Image 1 (cartoon, rainbow, N blue to C red):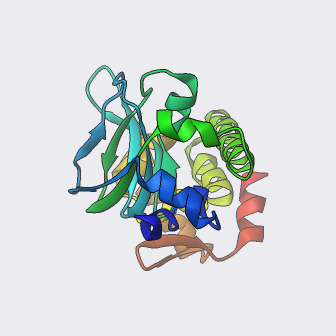
Image 2: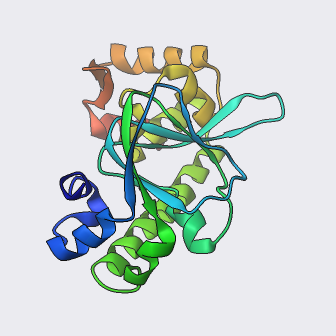
Image 3: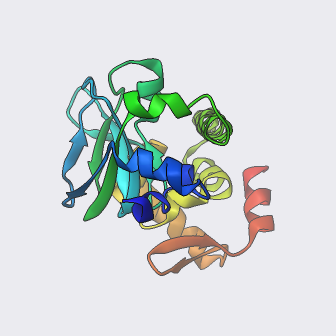
Length: 212
């Protein structure tokens, strides 16, 4: 278990005696593709670290459509904010691929949370999440083309191995509209497709398009 914990960013370079203790209240669980990890409104005692695979946290609208919120990969943790606030999970979480995930008992981990390096890492992580949420909300002031451009410039990870229809929902447009915009940017050699990811080739030109 200690070896697995070391793959999670929160536990990088933590001394073995502490990892040994954390291992005693942690469990490894494997999830299949599209398997639910937890539902919005559930109250559990765990937060999670990803050893292998990808996880999507999402909301559901009144018609039952999925609204993607955050995507997490190897080394990331999720579900921690709800535990810190002692509240139910505010989003659903599901495995987007076959995943190996560590479940960590927050009540037992809490004794470490106010001490460095955990306190510093958690503050930094939560600050980054808040700033990303603020920046992502700025998308609403743009038209569809500039929404895609702004996301490419500021949230490049969203364009890595994410299904287009889910990315389109996150950006507030149809999958057809997103495909059309991406095709135009590709034809102008501003972006390219590389190993299931969309990469920016001409950052300067992309910024110019955003500022027009």
